[in-house]
Length: 102
Length: 464
Image (cartoon, rainbow over all chains, first blue to last red; front, top):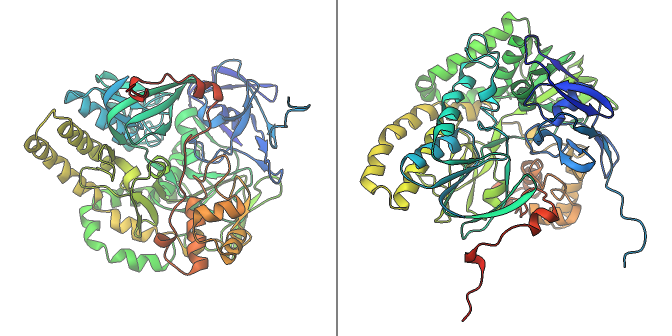
C-alpha cells in the first residue's frame, strides 16, 4: 500500500509483520510497518467480520487495532516500531475464556 | 505530585503555552500521548530529514515547528511524552498512564490543547482497506517517509487537501487525481467574506501556489464532484462520482478538521454548536477560559483557526494562568497580551472565507441510509434514522438504541455524523440534539495500570 519515498529516511528497524521481516525508519509506527508490508488489512471486525486497515493514523479511529507482541487490541498507529516487534492481524472479538468460572 | 499548570497536548498551542508558563515561573507539566512534541501539524518535526524549506517535501510551514519544539526542550516545563490522560476530575486531578503504569497528578490550573481531528467523511465504501484520511497520508510521510504506492486519489476539500497533494508531488509520488467536493453554492457564500481575503492574502497566495504546483505536476484536478464513493470488494479498487469513475489503489478523504472535544465533553464543559464550522466547540472567553474556573482550552480544540493561531492562543492562556495563580497582575497580563491579540486577528482574518468556502455538503454531513455512520459498531445512517422514528431524540439515546458510538473509538469518529443524521431526521438544528457524553477512561487502559495508581493525599478522607 505504501512505499519508502525516494531520498527518504533509511529503514533501520526490523519488525515482524505476520511473520515477515520488514524494515522501517526510526519514528515509524507499527501501523506504518503494516502498510509498508503490503498487508491488505490489519483485522477483521468483531461485528460483521469485514476487513479493516489503518485509517486515521493519529489515534482517533481505532481501525488499526492489532496484536502487538502477543497483546491484542493495541492501537498500532500510536505505538512506535521497535526492533524485533511482532505485529499480527487480529480477527473479530477476543474469544471468551473457556471453561467454568468459579 | 502537585503542579501549577497541567497542559494536555504538545501541538503548537500546548508547546507555546508550556514555554511561556514556565518562563513566568509556573510549575508546568506538558502531557502528550505521542513520543515527540509537535502535535499532528508538527508531527516528528524534530527528526525532519531535510531542514531547509526548499529541500523538504513538507515545506516551510511545517519546519516552522522546529524552533517551537526546541524552545520546549530548553524550557523548565516538565515534558511528559508517551503519556495518556485517561481521566480529568474537575477538582484538578489528572489520571495518567505511561508505559503501562498509572499515575495521578494534581494541577491548580488545567489547559486543554488537544487540537483537531479530521471530520469524518462518510461516503459509500469508506470502511474499505485502502481508504484513509488525507491527514493519515501526511502523517505517514512525516513520521516514516512513506508515500502511497500505485494510483492514489485525494478527494474532498479544504486547505490540507491541496497541501498534501503538493507534498506528495514533491516526495516523488504525485497523486493520480484530486477530486474537489466543494459545493458550487459555497463560492457565493465565501465571496461575502471578501474583506478577510485581503487581510488573509498571504494564506490565499499560498493556496493558489499549491494549486499551480499541482497543475504543473500534471495532477488532474476535478471540481464540483458530487456523489463520491469508494469502489471495491476486499479493498479499494476505484473511485466513482456522479458522471465519472477511475481505477485507484488508494483513496484519501478530507473534509476539513474539527475540534477534538473528547476530553472537554467528558469534563462536561459548556459547548456551543459552531454553525460556521459545523462542529461543537467548548465555550471559551477571550483568554481561553472554559466554563470550569480551573480549566482553559487553547488552539484548534477551542475552534479551528490553524497552527499559527493555536500558538498565539496558547500564549494567551499561559498569561491568564499566570495571572490567576498570582505570578503576574492583570495589568501585566493585559499589556503582554496586546501584541498576541494583534497577531491572532491577522491569523484569523481568512478563516470566515475558508469556513464558508469549504463548508461540507449536507449529504456529506448526513449521508444516505445505506452508508456506515459508526465504523466500530457498523451502524448505518438508516439504523440511526429508524432509532429516531422509535423516539430517540439525541446521540446518547441513539447510542443506547443501536450501539453507535459504543465501540473502540468511543464515538470520536461518528459523533458529527450521528448528530447531523438525528437533527435531519427530527427536522431540528444540530444544536438542539446535543452531543455524545464521552466518559473515562478516555482510551482503554489495563486493569494493572488502573490498580497501580498511587492515590494522592488530597483524595484520602480526613478522619473526624
